[in-house]
Length: 158
Image 1 (cartoon, rainbow, N blue to C red):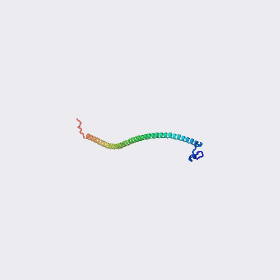
Image 2 (tube, one colour):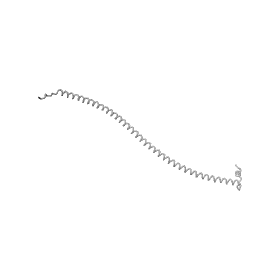
Image 3 (tube, rainbow, N blue to C red):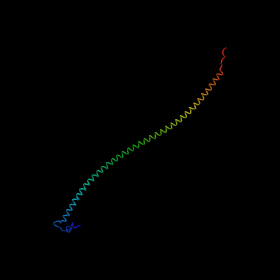
Image 4 (tube, rainbow, N blue to C red):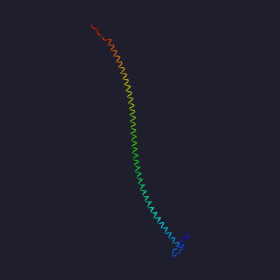
């Protein structure tokens, strides 16, 4: 202990009717420290109260943002599901259109094959008819020649 703070007289049982100047200074110093400590405690209590209020506000805002995030996530999930459903529907429609297109191409190919086959048959029939017409034409000429050669013409009257 520093010599300024003399507490030995109190410890030794010596009591003085008047306080020594050191004891008075010590008491004043103690009172000032106590005053400063009380002011510091008051300031700390006010700061603590402010921090608790800030923490409460922070918790309130966090809960609010958590709820907003949950709503956004739910909306996202709904939109994603709707979008996936639309994509699935479009893909199914595209597959159906592809099947229809393939069938149309196949049917068109078959129709073209049938048309070509029909045209070939018609060409053969045409060739046959042309040949028959020529034959009939030849036969008709021969008949006419035969008729001219074998027609009886009466002698001219005298």
